[in-house]
Image (cartoon, rainbow, N blue to C red; front, top):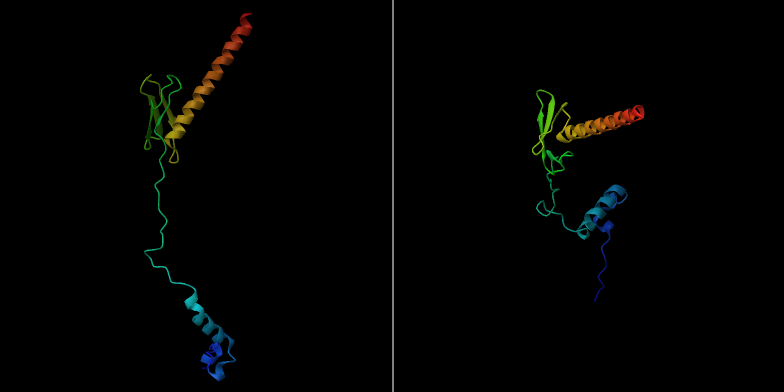
Amino acid sequence: MKKKTKKRVTDFVPKHNRMLGNHLTSLKKKRNNHKMGKRKSISTLKKPSSKKQPGLNKVFACPFCNREKAVQVTMLRKEGLGQLSCKVCGVNFQSRIDYLSESVDVYADWIDTCDATAKEITARGEEEEEDGY
């Protein structure tokens, strides 16, 4: 019995083309392609899922009555105003908004204004105590 010999890549190329390296490497690639595996079909490829991001809150906690979800913010874009009001204690606040503003910005402006007024009131109270004694 004769031994089976492996066929070389050069056996498939005509003699006059053996000197061409590019042709030889392309044949090697074609011949070895069956070892690489199957192509993935479109149905097996996973598409990135587009999850909807949660929106920003429009209802917040009131610092005056300490109730959660009591402050409602409404945005009046045409007028350029952001309004908030507490359902429990009835506090109202307005601030200017632009096209980038969100309800969180109006709430943050309100909290900043409340802090500034509280500092101002404590500073006045300290001045009155110093002058009174």
